[in-house]
Amino acid sequence: MPYNIYERDTLDEYIHDMNGRYSADGASFLIHLGDITGSKTCSESVYKAVDSILSKSKLPVLITPGGTLETKNNYVNLIFFLISFRC
Image (cartoon, rainbow, N blue to C red; front, side, top):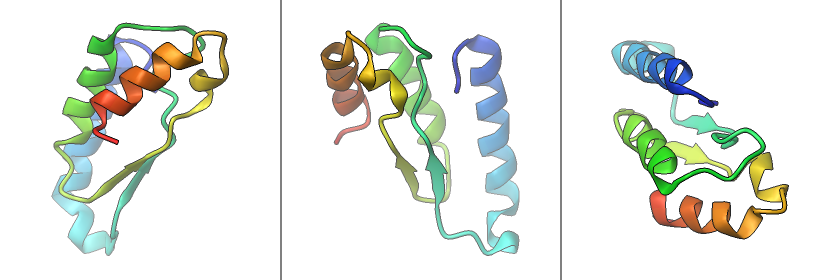
């Protein structure tokens, strides 16, 4: 997630909500499981859009590559992932 623009908006709203209450919850970090493209290769702009949303978090964000990197297009997705999330 997010696989489409609606889910990107939902993720953005979630980050905004978390920023408003993270200190009260005692959270130390946020984990995103990284499957942001579904099962397809997508453009670098999709990775950058998710990075832009996650960068709004007041908590440190940990992101994993997710299952998309297991597809036949895994090298393309991996390059976009590494560039976009500055790994």
